[in-house]
Image (cartoon, rainbow, N blue to C red):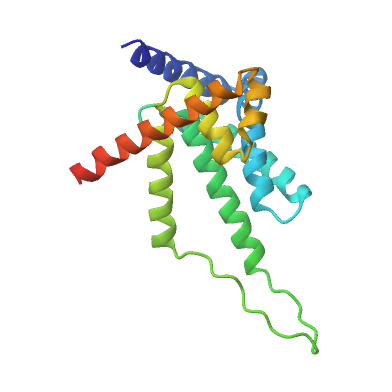
Length: 194
């Protein structure tokens, strides 16, 4: 019961934040960046070929978030899910654009075929699975959600997470273990319903 009340309160706070951004409140954009900047950067850094391109991608993602703030609907997705979906879409678009540019090839170089990019149907299915997973992660208690996000999406070690959160590593390990059990249980329930 308390967890539901907390989730409802979080959704209301997230909606209020996005409404403030849509209204052009600069401090709200700073707050959004403070919450999600490092996560978006880690994803961009893992995807982009250079640090400069990752930094550019982060700026572009936050511009997209600012421009689309009025479209955020907490009934459809938690804010973290929405931010991650926009980030993922932007990074995929950016990689596709880079891949589609014609690159000059010298006569003595061997032709290298481009790396395959998933076709739209596959991409859409992956996005739906990712969104579903992010919904489940967003519904976890705060510590469990934070540990899962930082460990699996942020690429941090449990020791780093413990240090950043000023939490004993045993607590971090327990939170991750409980989170994974909950996610497996929720996934099992959905698969048996399907």
